[in-house]
Image 1 (cartoon, helix red, strand yellow):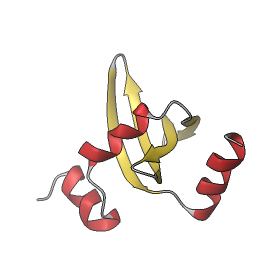
Image 2 (cartoon, one colour):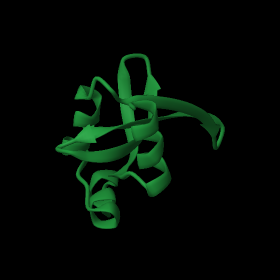
Image 3 (cartoon, helix red, strand yellow):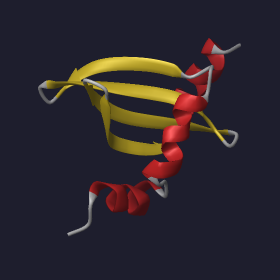
Length: 84
């Protein structure tokens, strides 16, 4: 059975290893929501000139990535509007 990282790579064409560089963007935007009984976090940020959407959970000092993908049109618009 494929692990979460491999499944994300197949589905979204993005590896978690490169996607975590979203945290290096000083202009990143972070959101939180409650989904499926737990708090989920979303960070939008630039990685090599592309806006990335990273969904994850955080417990203590660890982050568990749920999904990483190129940002949708609406997510890109939000990122650029907040950084105008």
